[in-house]
Length: 67
Image (cartoon, rainbow, N blue to C red; front, side):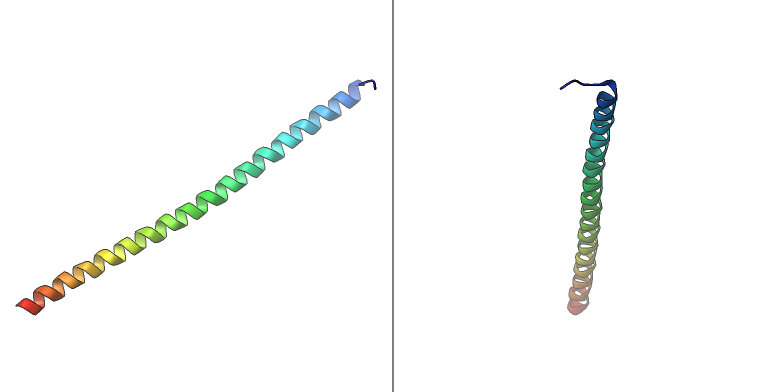
């Protein structure tokens, strides 16, 4: 089988396009993972803040009960 110039060019562009699609897929998956992790970190921070507020209220209630 003889490789003509046209066939080499088509294969070259095809491989380039395939690499571009692969990089795009990896970037998309990484972005989705990043968004998920940010949402989880935000939720964790909200829970920690709520627990901190609850602890403060418990300490205040205990102090009020003693006085």
